[in-house]
Length: 415
Length: 218
Image (spheres, rainbow over the protein chains, first blue to last red):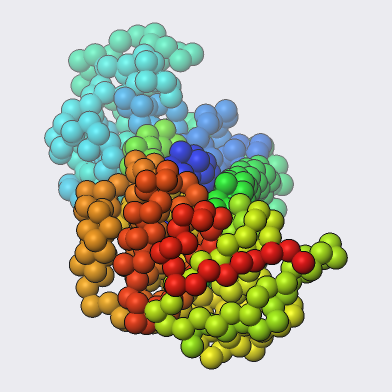
């Protein structure tokens, strides 16, 4: 029966091939979209852990989380360090880590912060940041780099680098002072891997002599040690990560921050901001998925139509098989077997396609959006989706299979 | 007795009732059914092969009455005990001659069990009918009508079904090929255990058969 089904399909190679292409392409599309969505969600959810609140200038909480944690978008405003000190001294606050953003190094975002960042900021549940090589920055002209930065640019400990002003790669270079790589972080699968960390004072240092976003005075050759440290104390930062002593007071403290009288600041719970993001993305995502399922449905209809119209041209074949003693259920099984084989071929093609697509775009997505796609062949939920498609195909092909029951054999004999 | 029919008739619903002669076919018998076009020859064949239901009268194959059998059992009877040859277009176009020849065994364990080496038996029968292995490996569109009919013969007799039914098997053949084909068909059949019923309107083939039965409209 299997050989018969195979031979029958081989004889209709072009229509069968087209159905396989249509089905596998729609399945590959569905799986790819699902993978990107899962990777995005997982990437976002795992990027930041251990932080109760993100404090920043008043505005969209989601925007604040996106540009501070995920490096998406640009910070529009800053908050003063006076406010930061005041809020950090609140009895409910256990720790605070300020960050100042704005510059980049060859496209990788520069984060100026304190060395507490590497102790307090966790990822993927509760995993701490680990140094693969070296240690945190201790001097003004030292930087720590993420694993992707090290790999992409071939940097090792001791490499001297310059920082570029602004978030554009082609911005003006802060070439008065260079930084030495003193630490390389182990991979985390989060935006941290694509970040360059330096101290807040170092960040202030490279902006000495700058006015309105461009260099006003060159300080090349200036002895760093000669610069008074209080000149390097930042007046503003972009945001502050806060850890509270007790989670019970989280919402109360959030309200308190949002009502802070001295400056327009707001505090965002990262999880809440992400939930807001998923609810925004969810509608588009659902619509896209629905569209995908519709394409799959149309492909299945195409397959069934091909089999049904094929049956008209196979009257003689069916008559011969019936004359040889093949019962109608057996012929119906032949049709179902053909459908199953078409679906299975489409599934295998889709899996290979997704694998190739994943391999092809994984790096691109990682660099462009920080989305890390799992390079697995097939996850359990994907297998389930494909099984549903195969079953739907089999279910739909019951229509042509049942047509065989209705066809009378003697009509073929007499032809 | 291989086949026995009694008072068999069939009505297609048009009020025109086809009556068929009573038939008793013993093992080894070669019977020709002759009659004019529209006399009901093909209907008779469809009744004998179990394709059409018995409306009136009876058919017994190897002692089993068709009326006692379900459609699925009739399919099994056909697979195990009947070999059918059509007048033309006997072969499935996407299978090779060899694959077409052994196709009947796919649906009958009984017939398959009677053959030790399917390839050997099939090619032997092929050689007996003048079909080389090369011809057997070709698809129907690469074969002549005569070669296709010979492959249909192999398919019908392979595994030794007790009854061979042939519906105008020579209608697509030229006169010289007709006699050769009938001769080969008769010699291929194991005369001791198999019987052949051939429908034809060609009087030239009559001498090759033990009995001639006329079917006429009443």
